[in-house]
Length: 553
Image 1 (cartoon, rainbow, N blue to C red):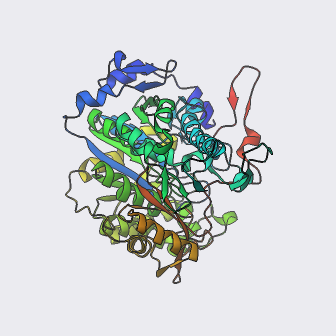
Image 2 (tube, helix red, strand yellow; image 1 turned 120 degrees about the vertical axis):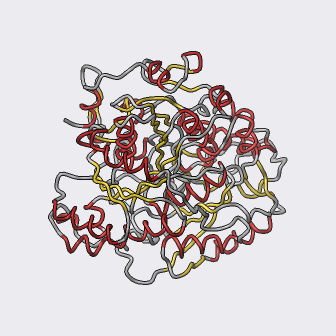
Image 3 (cartoon, rainbow, N blue to C red; image 1 turned 60 degrees about the vertical axis):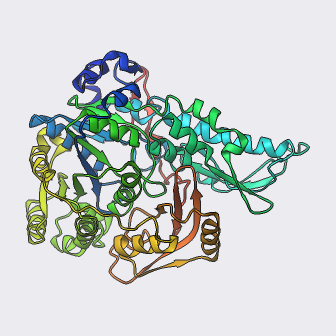
C-alpha cells in the first residue's frame, strides 16, 4: 500500500483524546475538525514551572535528492518510546507546499511511521503558512503604498520581498509597478518561498504574542537616502501583521498512526532558513512529555548547526541526545556511486562514502560535545553484508548504531533505538556552541565553514564584503549566522559529493534579518525561491470522484 492508503486505513483517535493523553483538557484546545487542534497558550503558562522532559534531536547525513527519512525516523522513535512505556511527544515542522508539489513530496513520514491526517497536514493544515504568507505580503503592500503616497520615510532601497508557498523560479527576479499609474515607481523585486520568509523565522523564534509583535516591528524593510535603516514599526505595520498571525502563533496538535501526540508548528527550510520547528512547540512539548523528539532539516551541517547555534541559544535549550540518521544508499551516493547502481550491493561504495557519516559524527560528538547515536534507516534493498560492514566500522569508532525499521513496522521497528536513547539521555554532555556572538561576522562564518563543513577557508564577493561592512556599521555584528547552502554536500557545490579535496566556501551576499535576530549568509548558488523539477509531483496528485485525494506521498 502507498503511504496515503496506509494512513487512510488507520483508525485515528479524536484529537480531544490525544490531548487528554498529555494532560490538556478540551477547554484548552481549538478543534479544526475531529483530528486537528490548536493548543491554547494558557497551557504553557500553567506548566512553565514544571520540570522539562528529555530533548532528543533527529538530524542526518547529507541527503540524496529524495531525503533520508528523518521525519519517518522521528515518528518511529516517538512510537518506539511509547512501545516501551515512555511518555513521548513529537515536536516537528509543518510541510511546505513547495516540496509536496515538487520533487520530495510530503513531509508527514512514511509507511507505518506517519503523522495524520496526512493529506490535511501536507496541504492547508490549520492555515499557518497561509497566514505567514499574508502577513509577509501585507508588509510589502504597506511599503509600496507608503512610497506611492509621498514616501515620507524617503525610501531609497527596499529590501523586503514578497513570498508564496510554492516553487516558482519565474519569480526569483520580477519587475513591479508597471501599471503606469501616476506616482507608481517601477522597481526590480524578488519573491522568496514562504518557508524562507523572515516572518516564518519570527513565528518560530517568538516566545509569545508580545515577543512576536516586537520582532515584527524590528524587521528591516529598507534604507533611506542617507543610508539609514527603515523598520516595519515606522510604518506601524506590526499590529496588523500580528492580527493575521494570531492563530498561527498557536501550536498544532495531531497524532501518529499509533496515536502518539504530535505537536506540529512552523516550517522553515534548513538550506535557506534556520530549519527548526517553533520554540513555542518545543518548550510546550518539554513540559508535557518525558521524552520529546524533534527534527532539524536536511543534513547536520545545516539543520543541526542552526538548531544548536541559533534556536538553542535563543531558547536556552540543549538536546540530551542526537540521532544521526543514515541510509546505505546515501552513504553510497557520497561515495560517488551512480544513481542507477545505488541499490546494488557495494561494500566499496560504502567504504568510499562513509567519510560523510564520520564527519557529522565528529561534529556532533566532538565539536558540540553531544551524545550521538546513528540510526540506520533500513531499506528493502540493504543487504546483511552491507549492514554488518557499517556496524563494524562504527563500533571501531565507539559509536552506537541502531537498525530502525519504522517504515515497515512502525514503533515496533524502533524499540531498539528507543531503549538505547533512554540510556543515552542519562549520560553527561559537554555542550558548546561553534562560535560566540561576540565574534565578528567573518569569524563566525569561518568557524562554521571550517569546523562544520570542513572547508579550507571562506571567500567573499565584493557585494558580500560591502554588506558585512554595512551590518557592522549598523551595530548588528553580534547576531548569530544562518548560512544558506546546498543540502547535498558539505561544500557549497551540490555536485561535490565526496568532498575529498580542499575546497572553499564562497559567500556571495548577506541579508540582515533584524526581526528574527540573525544574519543570512548566501553561499554558492543557493536560491531562496526553489524551482520545480522536470516532472513535478503535482502531475500525479489528483482527487477522485469520491472526493479522495490521490498521489501525495
